[in-house]
Structure formats: C-alpha cells, structure tokens
Length: 229
Image 1 (cartoon, rainbow, N blue to C red):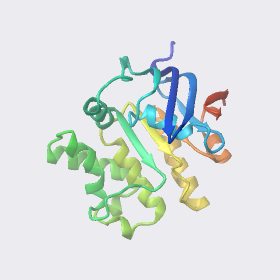
Image 2: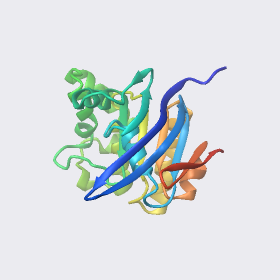
Image 3: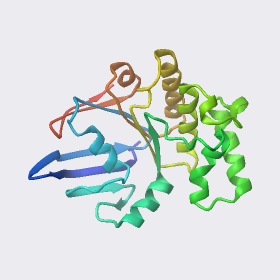
C-alpha cells in the first residue's frame, strides 16, 4: 500500500541576515514525510535542525523553495494564515514545556481548543480524556509548579494533541528531564506512534533516536544521512 505524503520540503533554503553577514541555515534540502512516521532530526549545533523544525511548524517561511503541508503549499502564506494552520494542524512539544503557570493541568490542555472555538463542554471532555491518556487523571486540577518535570511534559504532550493535529513536532522533549522521566516520556511517544500519529523530533540523544523509525542527520544546512531504522 502506498504511503500517504503528509509534508514535503522541496529545495528549501533559509538565509538569515546577521548584521552584514548572510547565514545560510538551510541549503536546498528536499525531504518527504509520510503519515504515521516517527522521525528524529539530528546533527551538530548550527546544522539547521531548529530552522527546519520552525519551517515545518509554520513558525517561519523558507527564503526559497516550497513547503507542502498535506496538499497545500504554505510557503508564501501570510502571518494570519500561517497562524491558523499552526493552531489547527500542528502540535508543538517544547523542551521547557511552555505551560501557563496560572492554569491547572486540564485548563492548559484546553487552551488550543479555546483558540479554535471549541465549545467549553466539548473542550473539557476532550481535555479530560487526554489527561487520562497521558497518565494524569489524578493531577488534572494541579498547577504546573505542583508537578514534576516529567508530569509537566505529559501535560505539554496532551495539549499538543488537543486539536488532533496532522503532525506532532517536538524540540528536545526530554532535554530537561532525568533519565527515568525521559524514558517515561519516550514511552508515551512510542504509544503515540503505535496509534498512528506522525512525530518529528529534534534531538541530540542517540537513545531518543533509537526509538524512532527514521533518523535525518543534518550538517551545514543539508541532509547528510537519511536512515530508516
């Protein structure tokens, strides 16, 4: 059965003006991503990992080349259109969790649905189910400062799933965790992969990459290796 193409970067370049210097963060890369893939992106600092993740997440645009998300070329969309796509089709998981400290677990999970206009009762039902899915049923009404780092990252994962995104993007999701908590979070990602979610993750960790099914290695803004595991 043919794989379903879910995202494609086609001869993408990204150049930044740093004072009088032009920095080429991405140098004409072309990559296809398919539905249900679990992909890690690796490489030395400055190789273009974060730039690529920002482009995939519609946080930035390529200087040249095309980015297809689903069947839509999002390369040239305006800020409002990109924001709408981020809210509806992309789930983000960050190293530092980025939770709202004044809100409870359940309220943090509800935030993306609020911006999508989901009715309050429906949002609460979805958030409750997601809290249970990531093992936080007993912590739903706690605030982030009352949680461990691993529990906060579980909240972030549940929040990223709230609008049933096309792609989950994770930037060093275990970077702030001890080894035990990190493995627990990777177990959650394994479960999501088994359930058919598309995961793209930036990491420096070989242990994390070994959990994925495909590993992209970048160097100097280009794809050095594309390894199926």
